Image (cartoon, rainbow, N blue to C red; front, top):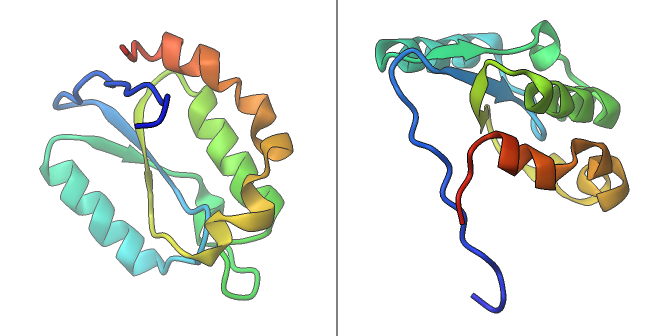
Length: 117
């Protein structure tokens, strides 16, 4: 893997909370709810911010909205996993520059989440 360390997050358990984010393309409310219903049937508790269905052109809101949503999910103590509602062009480029992601403190987040190497 060229010097990269593989990490193994703890397995999810029934009842765990999964944060849903939309860092790229916009998602329709009915598709979001259908996905959340599936996660609930699987025994998980999906959570998302009301702003997840915002639109800015074809993105899920402004870059700032999408980054704030991601940051807030990483900050929540109850969220055991984060899933993207959908992918798309908006999840690269301007949105995910190191400067914008720096406040996440990824080193401490992985340690706090019990990730093992």
